[in-house]
Length: 178
Image (cartoon, rainbow, N blue to C red; front, side, top):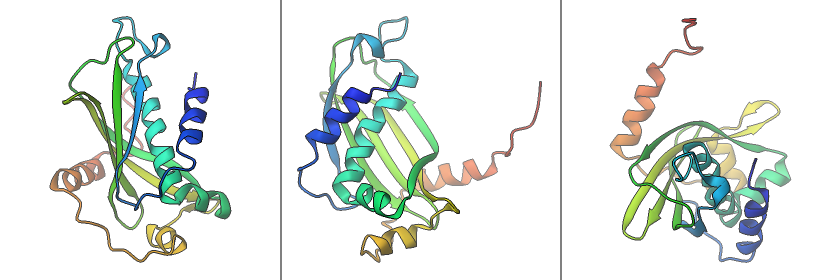
């Protein structure tokens, strides 16, 4: 089940928070609850992906993107991701969630997020987001223009460019091997 109560708490909590630049970090704090656990009493990997929404959506709110989406009737979707898990988050442990847009290309915004337990990074995700309309993907230049910006993307890190290139090699649709 989607954590709607937690989602609403984050949206309300950051409603009047200072505005963020498009590539600034949004930081929030969370706890791993029993309904987030897998059979090994640690944060479920699928739930991790859902909890990352609790960082991205308030970040979009604080950058002004969420208001723009509402005005334009646009949506935002995850068009790809890669996640690295390194430390367990166990029941009732607190963690810090850091989210930031690291750049864009003609079609996608790239967002990195990480869950931290003190000085240790528990997991890290790179997400490719697309802004969508009824006609399909909205070019990032159009989104930026609607936000009153004409920025050139910060240079994407080499590892992000390598992921983009590797993902472009992946067959779509997948081969039917059943």
